[in-house]
Length: 247
Image (cartoon, rainbow, N blue to C red; front, side):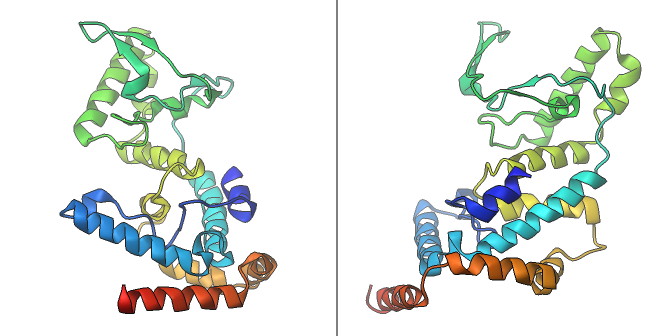
């Protein structure tokens, strides 16, 4: 799984599993949001948390869990031999329409790939591909897709192939997670976990248990030498403590 391989070796950039980047919608003013971003930047700077063994281990555990979740999902039934072309950035910037709002052209196919048909049943994000649609737009997408399927004499297959709205959202969340295409991985992971496990298994307790297991303790030990030296970490903590006191 590319998600797990990335977490094990490549820079994690802005990805901090237990401390997602602040989201503007969670704050009443721009000033509060900017302050939260400053605090987040200071937080992840200490001990280089983004590329630390602790953060990497969380992503490895999440990756293993996602692999199990994918195996438990019951995707919409489609032709197993069919892998249509999927546009990775179907945003308003890449869709051309005429004066009657008929789509005339779609551009920017550079990173297009073939995918199972079930992936095409996921409502695209608008205005940007990373945005989640409102429930009204999701319903409109599903109605339009159903009509298109029906018009091609696939009515009998239409209702079952679309799956439930909850399942469709789960697939959308998974695509964001597995592509590491978000600044809020924890917030994407949580509803996927809840969709599969419900209240049967507490997610936070699961992660704590996994971190303590022999397998992941060994993985942590293997990743630990890549962390910054303890002396560097101490100097960073002292610097930020001084900033809090006198800044």
